[in-house]
Amino acid sequence: MALEPPLLFALHGSEPLGAKIALHLGISLAAHEERDFEDGEHKSRPLQNVRGRSCYVLHALHGDASHTTNDKLNRLLFFIATLKDASASRVSAVVPYLAYARKDRKTKPRDPVTMRYVAQLFEAMGTDALLALEVHNPAAFQNAFRCPTEQLDSAGLFARHIADQIAGKITDQIADKPSPVDVAVVSPDAGGVKRAALFRDRLSQALGRPVSMGFVEKYRSEGALSGELLVGDVKGRQVLLFDDLISSGQTLLRAAAACRAHGAASVWAAAAHGLFNVDALQRLGAGPIDRIFVSDSVAIAGLENTPLETKLDVVSCAVMLGEAIRRSHEGGSIVELMQS
Image 1 (cartoon, helix red, strand yellow):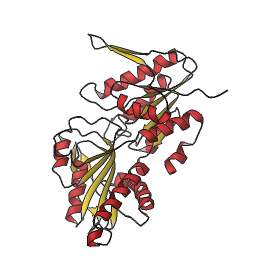
Image 2 (spheres, rainbow, N blue to C red; image 1 turned 30 degrees about the horizontal axis):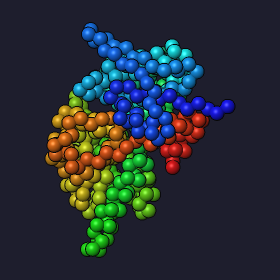
Image 3 (spheres, helix red, strand yellow; image 1 turned 120 degrees about the horizontal axis):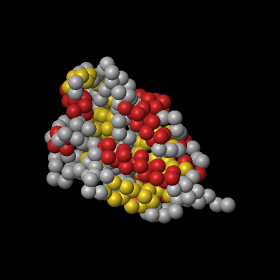
Image 4 (cartoon, one colour; image 1 turned 30 degrees about the vertical axis):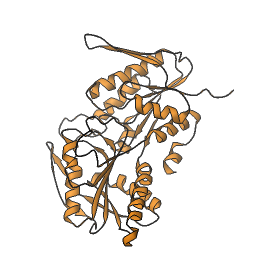
C-alpha cells in the first residue's frame, strides 16, 4: 500500500512559508480554522479528517503585531493537542524559529531554564517529534527534549547562495582584472564559533578555495554588550559575519566595527532568523555592514522604505524544510540532507 502524503498545517502568520513548503511537497496546505473570542481566548481545529494521518504543524514562534511569542506558542501547543484528540497517528511540530531557545542554562542565581520548560509543554501536548531551524545551542536543544528532535542548520543554505554572490561580484570586476579577494568568516562572539566554523567549511567547498576564520569577543551583563577584541586576520578580506539570529543588531554592529577597524575590505552578515527588534532596521541600515542575508523563517515587517531595504537579501528555507518533512515522513535521513 502506498504511503499517504503528510498533512501540513500552517497556523496564522506562517501561511506564506507554509505555501512554499507545500509546493515543494506537491500537496496543498491542510484546511483549518482559527477563531478569536472577545475575551482574548481562541480555538483552532482542523477542517478535514486527520484520523490515522501523519500531520505536520508549521509555526514560527516570534512575536509580531498580531500575536506575541507566548500567544503563538500557546496556539501551536493547543493545535497539536487538538490533532492528537482527533486521532492523528503522528503529530510533528515544524518550528522555523523556536522561542526561548536562547535561555538554555542558568546565568544568574535562581535563573529559569526556559527552553527545558518549553520542551515539557510540547511533550505534555503529545508532540511526537519537533523540527527546528538553527537553534541557538543544538546540544542544549537536543538534551532538553525527550521526544525526537531534528535541528536543521542553515550553513549550507547560506553558503551556496553567498558563494554565488561572491562569484558574481568577482565577475563584475573582471574588466579591471583584480585578484579574487580573500574571504574570512567571523563569529560575532566566541559562543558561536562552532556554528561559524561549519559555515566556513561549507562556504570553502562552495567557493572551491580556502576561507579563513575568526571571532570577536563579547560580554553581556544586564542587557549591556561589551568587548571588541578580534581574533583572526581580516585585513583586506571580504568578511562574512555568521550568527543564528539578528534581534537588536547590536552584536553584529559591534563585530562589524571591529572588523572595519582591522582593515576588512567589506563586511557582509548572515543569520537564519531576522527578528529585527528595537529599531534594528534603521540601526543596521545605517551601520557598517554592506549586505545582510537572512532566511524567511520569520516574516519581516516594516522593511519598506527603511535604510536596510536595499541591503537585505532573503534566502528561502522552504525547500530545505519541505525536504526535511518529506524525509521525516518517509523515513529518510535528515543528517544526510544537512551534509548535501
